[in-house]
Image (cartoon, rainbow, N blue to C red; front, side):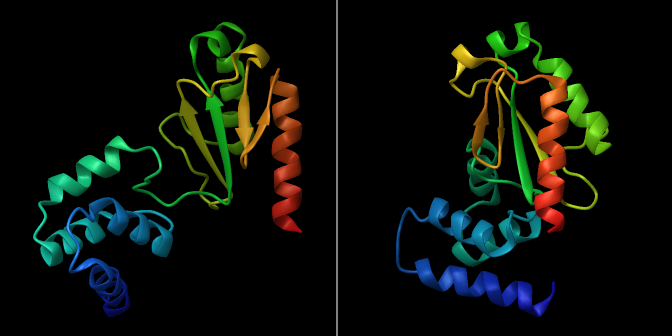
Length: 159
C-alpha cells in the first residue's frame, strides 16, 4: 500500500482513537479525503481500529451517502419511483446513457465528468419525472430537456 494512502488513514484513525462508536465518523472522513471509500481503506482502518471489516462494509453499503467507487464532477440523480416511472423516467435514463456513452452497468463516465445515480424516490412526485443535477431539482423532465442539461454541465465543466 502506498505510504501517502496509509498515512492519510493513520491521520483519520488518530482523530478517533479514544472514542467509541466512531465508525460512521471515520468513514465520513475517509470519503472526504479520497472522494469515495476504497476497499483497501476499509480493510486498513478495520485493522487499526479492531472493528470488523464487515461492520464498515455494512455501514458503507447501507447509507447512500457513502460511495465505494470514484464519482464524477457532475452528479445526476434520476428518480425511478412509481410516478416517475409511469411518466417516462426510463426514457430519460436511456437518454442519459446515450448522451454520456454509459453502458448499462456503468454509473460514472470514463473521464469522471458525470455520475448517474438511480433512486427509488426523490420526493417530488407532483413534478414527475424528476432528475436532480448537481443538487438542483429538475421537474417534468423529458429526454430532450435532459440532453440540454447535460450539455450545460459539459460547458460549465469545460470553462
